[in-house]
Amino acid sequence: MKKVGVILSGAGVYDGSEIHEAVITLLAIARHGALAVCFAPDKPQSDVINHLTGEPLNERRNVLYESARIARGHVQPLGSASANDLDALIVPGGFGAAKNLSNFADKGSDCHVDEELKKLVLEMHQAGKPLGFMCIAPAMLPKIFDFPLRLTIGTDIDTADVLEEMGAQHVPCPVDDIVIDEEHKVVTTPAYMLAEDIAQAATGIEKLVARVMVLAE
Image (cartoon, rainbow, N blue to C red):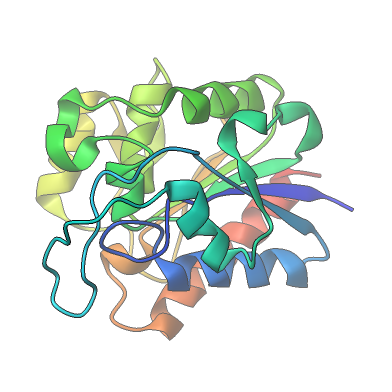
């Protein structure tokens, strides 16, 4: 059975993993007969947001603990992940990707990526194993790799300009499709960068998972 690492960044679109994206990913992996293995950084969240109002809360929460809400407790510290144990890696979006897995939300093109995530992604790539990034998560890729990748965050011109400034080759993409960098086995999709409902998000995410599984053969 193939094992697919899924990197979570909390629970909730404004300060963690986008829950719809994460759950659709887990479901799609299971439907392909593979095992999803969830990981998350064991560190404090960048911030905590009230998802009813969008306002910050004066609280501190742990990314790993919050990610366990999505994974039903089956989540491991990101530092324990090894490319030797995985056949593919997928990173859902949500602001957690831009706040907890990186600081893209604050720093834009000057951002840094979590060192544990960067190490794992590079190990996966060096082993020839496929990567899937969705929503805003592809914004981390130019800071992980020192060569240009074909990728997408959808059709947002301002964000696309920032990614190209960082060295990426951005490809405009509709919500229901994917962009594949065949040479480097990297698959991206816009998901909730463009999706207006869960069904729209699911179409592109399911295509991404399907392509990642093919590349993992």
